[in-house]
Image (cartoon, rainbow, N blue to C red; front, side, top):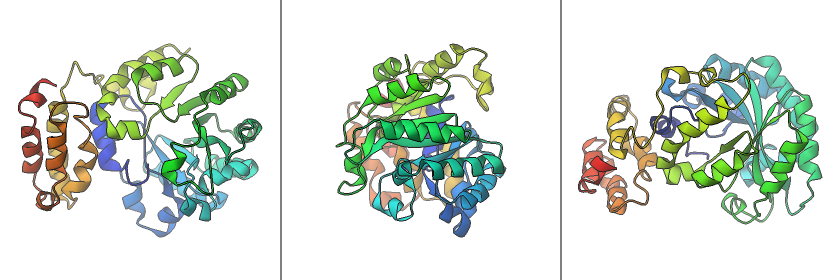
Length: 337
């Protein structure tokens, strides 16, 4: 989700769900150490609970960055061992790290020693076209010995040569059964399922055995689905021994978001003050609202809404009136949906 789940997107998603954990896009250690650190670490207070996803393979660099992530107040630190892009591979991190579980264990240990945040790992179920399950079982076993208790598992192999990142999301087959067996083999670990999940029914089915589900592009393409998550999150947490919703950072102070308590138009109107403050601070309207394009996904006249919000000439004006014009294309639909 690089360049997708930025702070504007996460602020939008928080307006749709009070309790869902939000993740940043993957940020590399090099970007934090040598780039504009504050820009990469900045987020909105409303985003909690929010996890910072980092990419890297040098334990010392990851430890250094872990301290900054903690100082900024993030709730969790996630090491990406699942991205298959060639650019990431050239940096010797992402999915290729699945072939080096001992190094990943060292990275996890270094970050845990450097900060008090929970350190989690996101990864695939295997590499290239090898469908043996031994690699992922060995990987999780070794990394868990370093103190990682939560694994976000994308239920596809990562093909490191010959497939683009997009193809890696579609071509390698989904094998949820592998992740299910992983959970059975490591019942003491928290296993979060990722990959190809697009409906509430699918999530409910997976939650009968998985500790959670992560969705990516479906939340971007059809963000209204997030309004159905708060009930699932509350139900899952309440079903766990000695757990309660208020254990989630900031959640005890929020009411659940549901389609019954707000409309799509409410979501946009609630974000007007945020958008205008960001415009005044120098942010571009395009960046602020690009994640809003799918809000009326599947609704009549949603194409007209998207066309207005995507008008390059009008976006350059950086004026909220463009959003009002887009809503106007829905001809009353926004007030009732």
